[in-house]
Image (cartoon, rainbow, N blue to C red):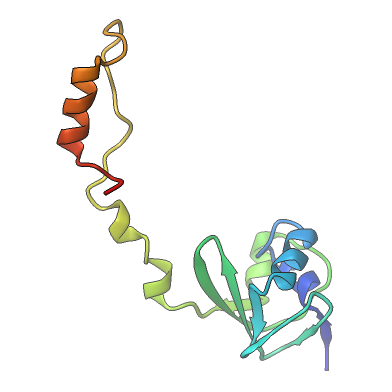
Length: 129
């Protein structure tokens, strides 16, 4: 049965940009195999489910193939199945609904006065209440 270190596998299939980031994620408890938190030196084999907390998302991967060297993205996609639920992948979409682009102020008008700033804040609503 083929097996390799979990930090090496996460880096080689391009889930993390560097092996150091993968190892740090393992050390801080953000990587689990099944229900067990793993260390960077723990091994992963085919058929296991790897849970990764990354950028506010809880991602789940089914290991299909074990590799030890970093490969291109198309080859890396063949090594795992992303089994993360769709609700988890789209959990931030509602937050962006209704948000507009950057604010724009006409050139040459300068900074808003204190009164204009208060009117803008009242219009937008206070975000910190």
